[in-house]
Length: 337
Image (tube, rainbow, N blue to C red):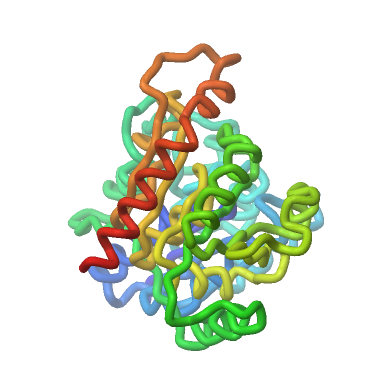
């Protein structure tokens, strides 16, 4: 049995846009044993994905020192991998694979670590004009011919849904009524709609009788300031109260997710929940490259050509009332159905 390692150690959305490749390889080569190397933070996303045979993790996106490189190298050697594919280029990870003497080491040919690889794919990601999912397939298809391409899909386990419903119940949310998740922050990989715009949207949704669930991290909860102190009627702030499994369950049972270009928008479409996204107009950051795939969505992008200094202000130029009108119209249409 050939043992294959697929390495994607960065963020939530990046991993979700890589998982279809793993599924395709397993379908085309069912005798292969497929292991994913991911960060500890994103590892819960892999639960329930039957085409993944094993999981290895590192604490962050890459290794911090030579000791960690040596430790990973020893683990890779013990894993007896025949092939490794690097979807997220990091020198330390490629070095560990080289030290482990994995016979096929596949990745792009245009990175600092490329000399550590022996199968270098001539693939320029940034200026390709292609979506990240399609680029991930382009990276592997010479090594694994005959793949059927898939869109992202995440399994949601019963315990994840039950945990989400238990959290909603503790906050007094009526489980029979639809709710909208608003996730106001991203981790800085793309310009974000301002907090003021998100807060204004939340106020208007609550005023219209929509139950709004605010999600985010512990650190992001502090950035909300005093707005959610005491939680205005119709607004439930669970930022900092969820792990990734519980967040997936909350997103699965939501009527809609509203956010910027960040992980939850990819979770939403991968579990079948409608997503509303705020995106910048720059090609390398736009939906053309990083938009959600796999499910229904509505993405707002400024219809302009910016320079670098304008990006943030142009994103904020997307009017709250336009986004609000779409959300209310979509919710009303879904109720009629």
